Amino acid sequence: MENLLNICLGIGLSAACGFRVFIPLLVVSIASLAGHLALSPGFQWIGTYPAFIVLATASILEIAVYYIPWVDNLMDSIAGPTAVVAGILVAASSIIHMDPLLKWSLAIIAGGGTAAIFHGSTSLVRGASTALTGGIGNHAVATVELGIAAGLSILAVALPFLSIVIVVVLLLFLMRKGFRKLVKSKRTEGVSP
Image (tube, rainbow, N blue to C red):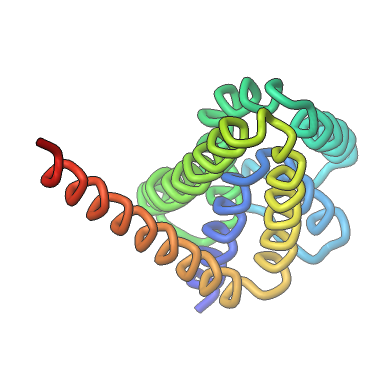
């Protein structure tokens, strides 16, 4: 049961990494420092004061950059691979008692994959916002992303099972939107002369 709880925690945090790279790591650091979260061997450094200071600084900078029009789109291209690595890192750090091969397989596939899916979807939303509003609407997008990253990170630490339910619901929503867009594009292709 503890492994399942840790996997839910890791996937919830990984999903949050798709919205903001450093916020979930900062939440993990705070939770570990407060004694509310045990970290996997080799990842205890996340729960140290130097790591907390670095992650807090990185979080503040990341938040600020996403409020600068056009720079936020540049940040998205940098944050893509970084979000995947952060997703793998938070997933691996939360899985404590598991065979290393299984742990890293889960961290890479579920953690990195979940972060990639959510980061990709937010990049598409930001790109559409930039195209439609010239970047002015990106402030609203950045605020929503920040709220989701912080809320999902805190929820993953406090209630991991609920966080995984929310992640699954969000994934199903994204799949439904993607499927509808695909069907619509296929219909449009069939109508063209």
